[in-house]
Length: 324
Image (cartoon, rainbow, N blue to C red):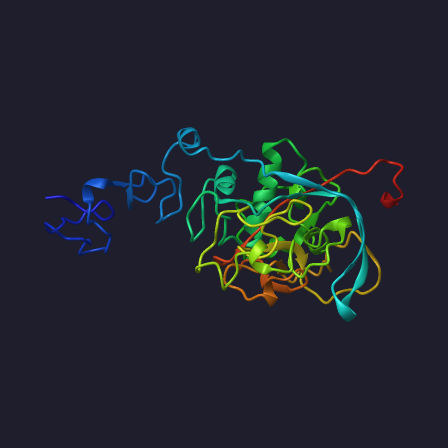
């Protein structure tokens, strides 16, 4: 008699599910135990659907599945002046040049850095989701250290936040160095500027088109799931999935716009713990996916419709007046 690979209960001959834990055992000879949680997985699984851990050695999986390199592909974005927001909310913002990830961080990329995959829709080239704002900050700092770059985020004198709970008040002491060389979340101004084509000043309602179906996976075409990144048309800067697929965490705390002219704004700094999300997702309607729509979540919030992408600052020459 065979035993369930998850809980060890003896299986009734011909049973399709374990009578104790409900694990599917229709083809028990094809299931193997995940080394992390001992749940039943098939031999062609890369991420365990129960715990999200990679069950094979990273080197073996990379050879077999051609997993992308850890570092995201970055697009250089020229700085400039634009009117952020629309209608009565529009206000002048000046931005330094920066680099932005061409797509949201994928599950493969997240696993390489963090060693786990919290996503609901498990597939390596799908965007990572079910991550908190705190998780995204941790990822940025850890990726920065992997490439010997200066982390952008510090609490006290430490850039390692692995032991800090998402609900800890210590997060209120986080400081952000916009001039550091490491990876970081985009500011809200950077995200909107990039979504609207930067200096190209695209006049589209969605990032890259007025036809949402060309550029976004959203509620009416997503089949209730995320999709592989870069499957839709990019915008004029070569950025994919700025609208739809997953909404994206932004560094800034949520607040009403300051309508006075701004230079490299990074939010109010009030440490309320509620942060901006932009872009809309696979479950949202067209309005929530346009380049102007704003929403927010607590920094410890997470959902299968929420991920993130990364940015890097580009150092300015010493003589550049924008440094003053």
